[in-house]
Length: 416
View (cartoon, rainbow, N blue to C red):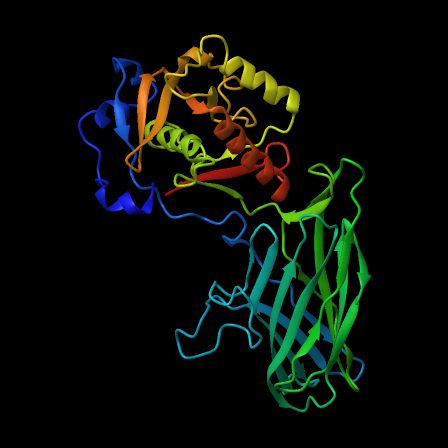
C-alpha cells in the first residue's frame, strides 16, 4: 500500500469481505466478480536478521583430584536472565549483538551466531575440603558465516570478573574442535587469569562438502584450567552454535548458514516491479486457509527445476485464459509458488479449482477482483508478465542468498 493512502484504509473490511473470507470448503459459494481493497499489511521482517534461540550453551562441569591432595572443580552455568533487571550485570563484560536477548542461550540468524552471559567458575579446595580460591569468568562468543564461503571464524572472550583466595598463577587453555569441518587456524588460545583482564581468542574453521553435497557442522572448545602445584583440570567441553550447515548445492558458490533460522521473502505493494504479484499473494494469505507463507504455515522450497515446471504447467493450464482486459501483457501467476512443496499441483489441486483473481492499482490503493472463488486454497492471478517474472526472480534469489535446500522452510511477508 502506498504510504500516502494508508490513512484511508479501514481497519476492518465489511460487506463483500465476509464472503471472501470464507474457508476453502465454502469459497465456491461466491457468485460473480467482487472487488476488495486490500488492508495495510504488517511491518517487514528482514530476511536474515531475526534472531531465534536454538539451544542452551550449558556444558558439563568437571572436578579433578590432584597429587597434592587438592581438588579443583570447573562449572559452566548459562545465566538465566539478560540485562540488569536486579542490579547485577547479566550481559557479558564484552559487548555482543545478542546482549539484549536472554543470556546463556545460543541465538542465530541465517548467518550469525551469538551467546553471552555464560559463567565459568573455577574452585580450588585443599584435602580437607576447605576452599582455597575461586575465579568467576564471563564467556561470550560470536560467529559470522558467509553464504558464499566455506571458511568462517568466531570471536570468543573470557573475562575474569572475580578472583579470590590463593589463585596466583591460574591459567586457562582453550582448544578448538570441529566435527564436519577442519580447524584451520588459531586452534589454541588462553593465558593467565587476572581479574578484569579479558582473554580474547577465536579459531578459523573450514568445511569441505563434496560436490553437490551437504555437511552439518559442530564446533566447540575444550577449556583446561591449571594451577601451579595443583596441576590441570579435567577438560571442560563448550559447544559452539548449533544448526551450522554448509553445502555446495545452491548457486555457483558453496557456503554456510544456520539452518534453524527461517528466511523471509519480503515483497512490497508499493514497489511497481512486484506490487501486483504481492497483492495477489497478500489476498491469498488473508482469505485462504492455510495462510501459506505465514509463520504458522511456511512455504518449503522445491529445488527440482523439472518438478517446478511441471507444477507450473499443471496449475496454469489451458483453463486459465490470459486477457488484455486484465493486463496488456497478461499472465498466470500461481500461489503457492510452483517452486514450493505447497504448490497446487503438488497437493493434487487441479488448476481450475484454485481461485482466479485480478489485482489492480486504483488511486494508489490495491484492489482485487475475484473472477472465480475456486474450491481449494490456491490462487491463479492475472498479473502483468514482467511483474510475474520479477517476483519469481525474487523467489529464486532468496533460495540462493539464504542457501535454501530442497524442503527448507521460508516465509513470505507482504508489506506496504
